[in-house]
Length: 148
Image (cartoon, rainbow, N blue to C red; front, side):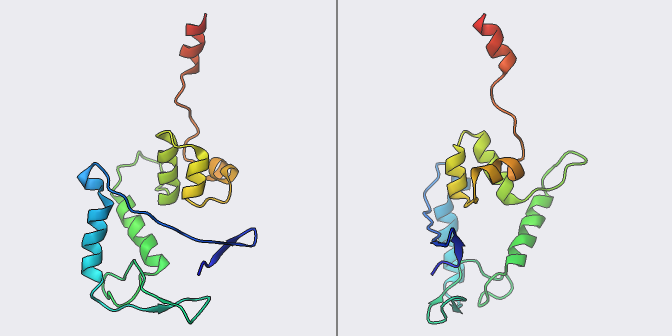
């Protein structure tokens, strides 16, 4: 049962895990290993909107696998992981969601796909507030000089 709504419509989160050619980025192997470790520990939660529904949370507390990881725990892990990034002086660590969306855009993913995949409320919001760089891949000076 979706808990989020947009324009009074429930939002369902559907996820597909696919194999990646690079073994370091192979999410199926990572997921399979992770699930083999946590699946044997019972962790059942009642849905916050419909207590009749019970589910088993995917992300668990590292110290107690019978408890789900809280949003704060996940955020703290992201901060720790981001802390090992070699950032230039004066540059603050950014949120993973903004970083991932920006990298996807720079790699050529259409904004519409990024907005849909990352569940941004609109392309304008992503473009104005969350895209970390608005530079283009086109060198306009070179393009203009070639046209003459």
